[in-house]
Image 1 (spheres, rainbow, N blue to C red):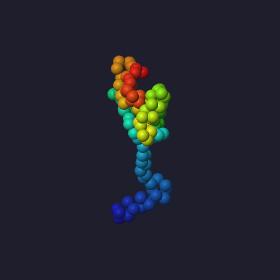
Image 2 (cartoon, helix red, strand yellow):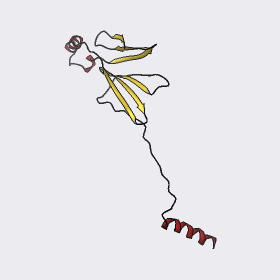
Image 3 (cartoon, rainbow, N blue to C red):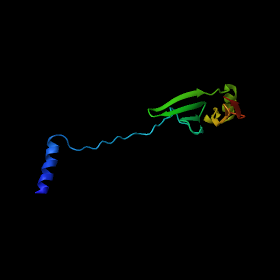
Image 4 (cartoon, rainbow, N blue to C red):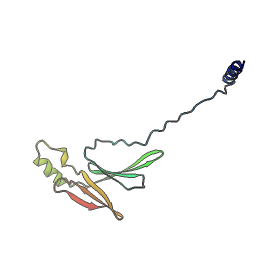
Length: 127
């Protein structure tokens, strides 16, 4: 008799559209996809922040991670076109490595020290 009452209760809940439901919300982590391949990268993250600085080929990416996704700011890095042309002329075949690749990003006090290959010789500056 008890089984009949339990079964009748379950059926009545189903027919009354009050059936128990589970709701799962799958939240993807924030991701960033670079617009071009970045073969050589340097990264700086200050602990306690949601900002990541990524040095790439002729650019510094400032990536801010939030609940809504990733906001990116791309800061172009100056390239000495004469040094790049000389690098390309010396190499056979012309190499992509003649671009300015950011190799170091480090915060010192309130300033960032950034170093790049600058073709030849490597160079550092404050930002």
